[in-house]
Amino acid sequence: MTSQPKRRNHDGLWLLSLTAVAALALATVAAVVWHETGGVGGVPLDDAWIHFQFARNLARGQGFSFNAGVPAAGSTAPLWTLILAGAAWLGGPFPLTGQALSALSFLIVPLVTYQLARKLTANRWAAWLAGLLVALNGRMLWAALSALETPLFAALTVLAVERHLANRDARRYGVGTAVLFALAAQCRPEGYLLFALALLDTTVVRLRRDGLRQGWRRLPLLPALAFGVLVIPYLAFSLQTSGHLLPNTYHAKTVITGWPALDTLSIAAQYLILDNPLILPFVLLGVGVLLRRAPVVALWTIGLPLVYAFMHVTLYQHGRYLIPLVPFNAVLAVAGLLAVRPVASQRRWLPRWSAAHLAAAITALAVAGTAWRLPTMARLTAQNVTNINDMHVALGRWLAEHTPPDALLAVNDIGAIGYLSERTVVDLAGLVTPEVIPLLLAPARDARLAGYLLRQNVDYVVIFPNWFPGLAARSDILEPIHEVTLAHNTIAGGAQMVVYRARWR
Image (cartoon, rainbow, N blue to C red; front, side):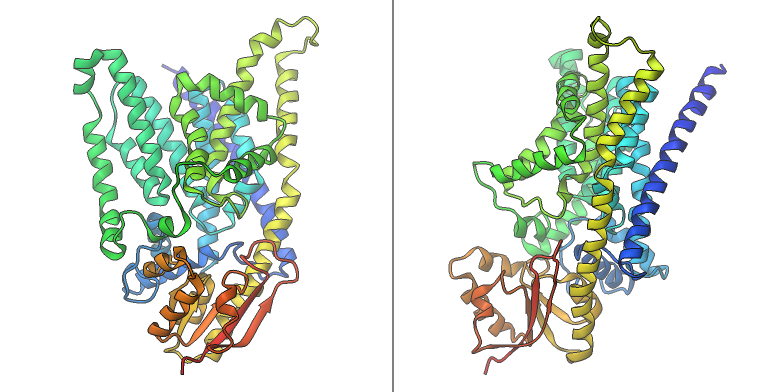
């Protein structure tokens, strides 16, 4: 009767230490950013400002919109947008409030990683090491300060998978688990893939265990229904506003083909190596170990990069779409480490260390393999913030001061410019202006865009000239009136952004 509280207390100490390490790492990176930006701070990616704009409009009662009162399925993370809207309604300032929420989400990720690894390995030290690898991961810390949905999605997916495995082993699939998967899917559309893998895993396990006749009767139909109830509203909203079930971003940033983009797979492999080259062999071994025991974990970590490759998704911005895999890779790594322990103990040529000494040595190597990137990622985060402040934030404020309130802007990076200028925008990337997407994929793209902008009677065009060279060269209709050039660009889509005044007549 007394063993269970003791077990929880032991876990509590491990979890407390993980929280302390994660908080210290986060504070260190935040301090570097604060120092390097001269106390200005900010977010390292313009996309956060897109969420801020949707959230502010929601808080003001102007609907789920980027341009006030114009419904748009331009958010791939409606759950995150709703959370930010609640913060805005309570008076929380952006970007600070958004960063506080992403930082809080980050602090949860090592803890749920510990829980998942603990379940799969039954080893507290291994679970703690997995959490430690997450807490010290430079890309995770970048995401923690991004005010983006990435850390929340990571936390929800890890927690959902842990609950899925518990339900599967208990032969009873809870509705609460399906709710976690649904929340993850509302945080990132990749969550739909994860839930599909979980359903497949449950179906296979039950059919094998209970036979074909009984297995079909015990499938988790009620949880699947609960999942559907939670995700259908935004799917319907997206269908109504854009004609597609998935958000505009999906159609604007993907091109599905029958052959994977090798560049995407190469970049995914590079980030896996950069995250921790020393544990990479154990990650690969862990895939084999968990493929039978917890196929959802193995298939998710393998399948997501493959799906991105077939969709030809560009994994730029520190591979941010793959950052949610960091905790799963950590779990795979410790599973692989434990798998080689019996083999290593039988090798007489290896030094005979005590278990404590061996654990300490492995921990030191694993931490070193992760922490070596921290100084670089801290500097990169600061440089990213400086770039966004110097270009997007500065242009948003300039446009607020130098254009009429009713001006219509055509912009290819809409976040800070739309939020700070408070002008109506035509999105040349198609995220909140879906009718632009077919033009982007058509021949003579820039000429077609010029015709579209003429029909919309756009007043100003704000673009990266390297994105739209044909449009930028149209001196007969576009007059450059202001520009920002970054001396050292680390995150923006181009080093130069130009404001043009449109002259259609």
